[in-house]
Structures are given as structure tokens and as C-alpha cells.
Amino acid sequence: MRLAPPTSLVPHVAAAATALLAATAAAAATPASPTAATVHTLPNGLTVVIEEQHRTDQVALFLRYGVGSRDEGVGEHGCAHLFEHLMFEGSANVPTNMFDTWLTAGGGDNNAYTSEDETVYHMTFPSGALDLALFLESDRMGFLDAGLDAANLANQQKVVLQERRQGYAEPHGRDSDVVSRVLYPEGHPYHVPVIGTVADVEGFSLDGVLDFWQRHYRPRNAVLVLVGNVDTDAALASVTRWFADVPDPGPAVARVDGPTPPAVPADALVIDEVDDRSVTLAWRTVPLGHPDEPALDVLSYVLDNGRGTRLADALYYKHPLASAFGVWSGMSAIDGTFQVDVTSAGPPLPRLVKVIDATLARVVRKPPSQEEVDRARKALLAGIEDTLETPEGRAGLLLYCHDTYGDPNCLGPELARYEAVTPADVARVAGTWLAPEARVTLSVVADGDGGSLPGAAPVELP
Ligand SMILES: [Zn+2]
Image: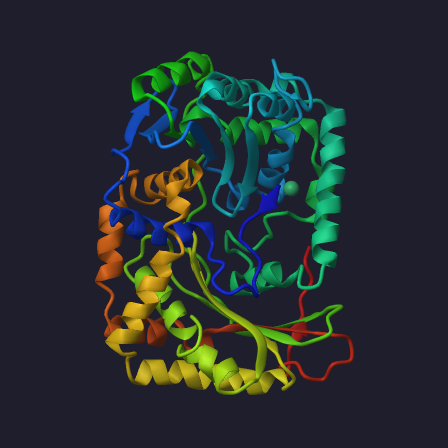
């Protein structure tokens, strides 16, 4: 199971939501787009989104629960992610470990991810396995408590703690969580890592996690998306057959939204087992759906998209200062991050930061050319087209559209948002959101390396 968001230091590994945003625009331009998705609501409150795509026999099922690490209270940090594990431990009619076994036997596979905002369980399977898939998902939505026991819980607590230990022990394994911890200070719903704290994960009890499950894993807090070789009416009848008896305890508890405390500029330090030195510059930006989102995405490609783009030339093609770098703009439901990651080819980190500052200042002073913006927009959209050819790519898109705009068919308006970005917009968002005095930095160096930013201080993860 993987945790969102993705790791840094990989150019343009955008957060899933950002990729989907771009995806929306690409798909709208494709004449062979499938027919519009339809939205249905079962009497118990479950939202169902269905889109027929008959190109192959595959079907993608995405089940999104509106619960992420931001919904965890005192003593609950890590609980949403823990459920990613517990949901495979058995439910009333599915013995422990049989979820995967049965789905695999039906020709399907599955995975899940947890972020600050949501937990998504997803699978793909041949169309003949639709009822099997719906049975498996409905059983754990409605009747997980009948299958979960203290031994399963204790086992998965150990698995999660091991996952955390191993992840943080990898070179650069702590970077992303450290940046978030500083960028989203105490009191911000994104402050605690999705994987949780050691104390909380160790302290979970069966009663406590079942209480968490009852509050959040209910039909009115879930969206089920089906894309692929299905007939809408028949698929809806199957969904109704399997989910109709899932009890409706009413709406989920209200979610934590905001207002959020502002970032406090700071220089963080991670001493790591690395044989080079790297620096991350990160800024708080805007949430998903904000008017400045497309221009920030385009800006990331104006800065870094091969030879002839601003930071790529300044750090690599014209001046060999970096051995690797990436620029990333990612938005979540209640906040966003713009991030520059650079691995030094040798120079101390302050020198790299000076180059980045100067490059950004030039973009603010004089907007990029129309040609630069067109090239960036094209690159932004091109990488996503393939994704949308698959049922799972489209299912992720529909989910994104539904969550962000309340309408799974947001392709057209999204395309228009990206088409409307001008060079002046790009300069404006750089000036508005990426001020040097508003940023957080992270130096990652080996023990004894004197090349970090002056004053950088170690940050502990709980
Ligand atoms: Zn996990």
C-alpha cells in the first residue's frame, strides 16, 4: 500500500490530483471521449458514478471515503492509513486474507492510498467479476466489525510501525513529511504525517478503531466510481443489490476545514545517509479548484521542462550546478504546495538557492513569453493523455471532478481554465505565492557536511 503524496526529487511527479487536473484538459480534447458519466444516490446515501467505456473488457472500481489524516483527532493520528491495512483483514463474509485471494481468482487486482484528505480503495477486473468486486467492497463497508478482532489489529499495528521505520530509514525517506511538518505548522490539519505518530499507532485499541470506522466509513461519506465495460442500468442494479443492506447511520462527522495557520518561514535540516547534498524550497499556495491553480501548474513547467526552460538552464544546461532537480506544484483540498528540489552537483546549498531566487525574480519582473507558456501547457497536458485511455485513469479523473466540483463531468471547464492562462498570470502567481520571505527550506546533507543552509535546524518526526 502506498501513501500519498508522492516523493520529491522526481521531476513532475505531480500529486494525483494535479495530474488529474491536467488530465481533464487532455481528455476534453479527445473526440473519442466516452459518454458522460452519470451520478446516482442509493437510499442509504452512497453516491455512485458510472461511465461506460467499451474499448476493452476491463472495469475500474474506485471507492473513495471522505476521511484522511486531517480528520484524525487526539490519539488517532495514523488511523485512516491503518484502515488501509485493516480493510483487508476480513469482514462478516470475507475471511482474513481472502479479499485478495478471491479478487485475484476473478482476474482482478487492487490497491489503496491514503492522503490528508481521503482514502481511496481501487481495483480493476474483467467485467464478469463486477458482482464479486461489489460484494467484497460492500462487505467491508457495512460489516467490517464482524470480521475484525484484536489479534488482526495488533498484527497490523506492527506492520504499520515497520512500514514507517523502513520508509524513514531510506535515503530521503523523511524529506516529504519534514517539509509538510514545517510548511503546515501546529494547528494545521496537514501537520501530522499521514502514517501517523508512533505513540498513537501503538496505542490504538479495537474499540477505538471501530469507533473511527463507524464515524467515517459509512455510505454517506463514500463515492463509488465504476468505469469500463459495464451497462449503466445493469451496473447500478448490481451496486444496489450489494450495497442496499449496508446500514445508514447518517452523515459522517463534520470535517476539519480551516481557517489554517499561515506558514512560518523556516530552514529545516535532515542529516541523512546520502553521498550528496540537496535542498528543497517549498511554499504554501492554493487549494484544488482555486483560480490560480492552472497558472501555478504552468509555472512549474516554465521553470522545468528540459533544455530552454528557466531553472533547467540555470541549474543544469547552462551552468552544471545540479545533478538532479524537479519542480512540483500540487494542490490538496484545503491547501497547496509549490516545491523546487535540487541535488547539488557539488556547490554548497546557499549558492543553489541564490540561483533559484534570481530565476524566480526574473519571471516576476518580466512575464515569460507566449511561446514559453504554450510549450509548458502542452507538456503539462501531454503526459496525461495515455492515463485517460485506461478505465482506472478515467475513474480517478471522475472522482477528482466529483470531489472538487460536485460534477464528475468537469473536463470541458477544466480545459478552459488551462487554455485561459496568460504569461501575465504566470508572472503574477510567481510574485503572489513564491516570495523568498514566505518559503520553507529543507537541507538534506550527510553527517559532517558543512554545505547546508546557515541556521538550518533538525526537525523530528513524531
Ligand atoms: Zn501502509
